[in-house]
Structure formats: C-alpha cells, structure tokens
Length: 68
Image (cartoon, rainbow, N blue to C red):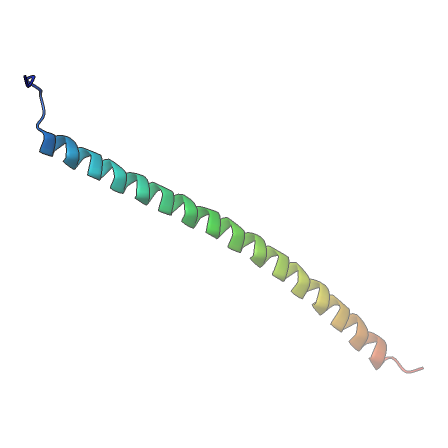
C-alpha cells in the first residue's frame, strides 16, 4: 500500500542530484582556495630567496668595486 507523499520520486531524485552538484562545487571551491594558499606561501618563500640573493649580489659588487 503506497502512502500519499508531498513529493514524487522524481522530485526527490532531482533535489538529491542538485544537492550533490552543489556539494561538488563547494568542494571544488575549497580545493581551489587551498591551492591558492599553497601558491601564496610558495610565492612568499621564493620572494624571500630572491631578496636574499639580491642583497648578497649587491654586497659582492660593492666589495669587488673597492680598490685594495
């Protein structure tokens, strides 16, 4: 004996599919956000390396330009 429900099986399935799609998009956005954070951290690390090497290069140039 079937009970009267407010929604048809097709409506329930459509809502569940929509929910799955929204969850997938949320996970994708989160994963993109995590990737962005990782890239920003790597960018900072590389900038610090470049700054350090630039300072060393300038110090060596100054030292080499002095007459002994």
